Image 1 (cartoon, rainbow, N blue to C red):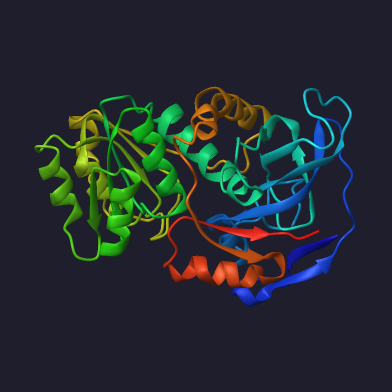
Image 2 (tube, rainbow, N blue to C red; image 1 turned 30 degrees about the vertical axis):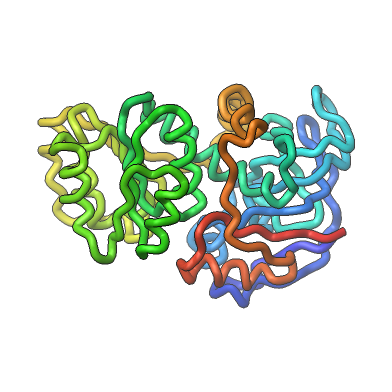
Length: 328
C-alpha cells in the first residue's frame, strides 16, 4: 500500500510517499480501506520531531480516517466487512489502509461523504472529552474558545451552541470573525486588533465566562484566568505559544474557585476512547445525521501532496479542516 512517511524531522517537504506492507488486524481491530484522512496539528508536531507516536502505534502520521472496513479481527462484534466508518486512531492514517480499534469506530453519518466523515473523529472526540466531560459545560453557560476557525474551534462552536451554551471566540482576522459568527458564535474577537480579555469581560457584564478552551498557552493563561467567572474551568489542550507562562499569579484560582485542567487524547487507552465514542454515538451522531451540525472543510489534497496539506495548515489561513483524499 501507499503511505506517507516522515523521512526526517523538518518542514513539510520531509513527507514522502512510500510503499508499506498492508497490515492485518489483530484481536479487537479492523482494517479500514481509507478514502480520506484528516490533517491535524499533532501531525505537524510529530513531523517536527516533538511528538513521537505512543508505544505500539505506527510511525505513519494521521489520527483520523474514513473509509470502508476491509477486514475484521478476532473478537470484533457489531461491525462487518463493507461497513462505512470513521475512526480515531493513534497513527497510520496517511495511508491506503489503516488499522483501527473497534472501540473507536463510528458510522459515517447519513448523507456524509468520506471527506466529511474524516473531519469528525479527532476534533469531535477532543471537544467532547474536554469541554463536556472534563469541563462539564452546561446549557446556559458561556464558553470562550480560542482559534475559532480551527478544526477544534469550528467543532466547539457548533457543539456548544447545539447544547444550549453561549459562545465567545477569538480569531486572527475580521473575515475569520465573520465566519465564526456564521457558525453561531455570539461574540467573535480579532485577537490581532481587539483587547479580547477586556471585551470578554464587558460582554459578560464583568462576570466572566464559565469555560475556556485554549490551545495557545503562553501569555494567554493569565488572561484566561482573568476571564473566568466564579467556579470557572480552564481546559488546556495545546501550547502554541509554549507551556511556560513566567510568573503566573494563581491567586484568582483561589479567590474564584477555578479549575485548571488539561489533557492529551492520543496516548489514552482504547477503553477511554471507546467511552467517548459511545457518548458521541448517543449525543452527537443524531445531530450529524439530522444535519443540525456539520464539519467545516477548508480544503482537500491528494495523499501524495501531504506536504501541501501541512503547508496550508502552518500558513494559518485555513478555516476548518484540511483533508487528504485517497484514491484506490
